[in-house]
Image (spheres, rainbow, N blue to C red):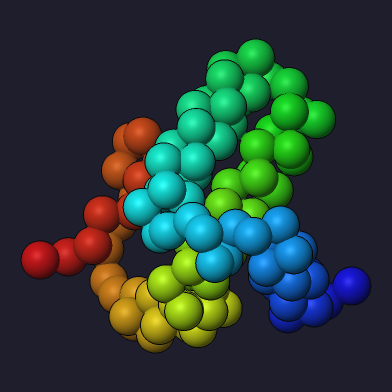
Length: 101
């Protein structure tokens, strides 16, 4: 299944569950934070199945947050990519890319 189709299916699921109509970007942001903490725990435990679950759940909460705000996550991702694709910088000792000033 393509990412685009999954995103559409997830939005439809969120509409059917009343999330899109009755939740908010802020509420979904809170849910995303919960899922990020679960990801941290999975990474600390080197639990691959829990990592898969957490990364997936994070994407679902991001898609729901976008839908609540009448945005499209793919469009947001494309926007971000267009801003970073030509950046110059370096990878620091912690594995984090640091852009040039």
